[in-house]
Length: 278
Image 1 (tube, rainbow, N blue to C red):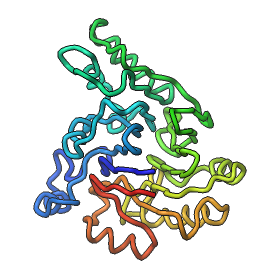
Image 2 (cartoon, rainbow, N blue to C red):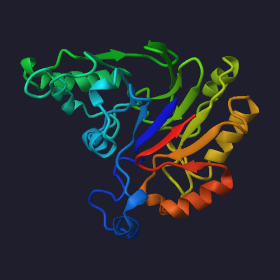
Image 3 (tube, rainbow, N blue to C red):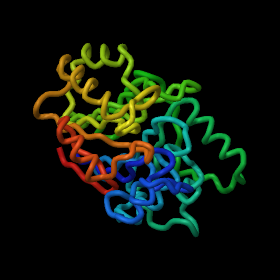
């Protein structure tokens, strides 16, 4: 299995859109891996996690065939994770020719479905592409998506809806994708232990970076605690790849500084365009 981190920032991006703090100015000056767009990941070439407004930018930067993606699992309805406007472009017309796959299947919670339906209501009916389906799923649902089985687990985030983190497996390799969430609920750890989930790669929310973590996100102070608990119930071991991702400019550490801090804790640091095969 392969994961490509298309975007690795929190909602504001890094440098943040309107920000002139020292960390955003420094990121602009240094460029490279310090430039982070909004969170999205591609599994192999056919499964997306989230659909932010930066999707078009991600296609340009990573040169992949977006029409080849068959399935998109949305974590929650916040605009940095689901912005449906560009789905109009997935239409065999003047917008798209010779698409690789006939249909993109999107899965998400009720709030995601409501956001999509609101977009549909505000759009001319003739502009809604028939090549997109949006399917509501609930916590602990397992969806068969081609060669993948994807299980939605409740995330500690966005209390006005039921956000998800995901287990994604192809029967040989397993990814545990922990974005966006604070320290997972006990019931999530219980589910992972009861179902004997063993992860080959775990991607951890690290929005707070060097700040004390709280609420619906984690930071460098809390991800080691989550990793230790996952180790204690057999979800990960010394062979598991552990990656921190989803960073806010408020967290202060630029890429090289973050790598130095994370390496001491046993984590890799994602950057836009980073690909890991596992």
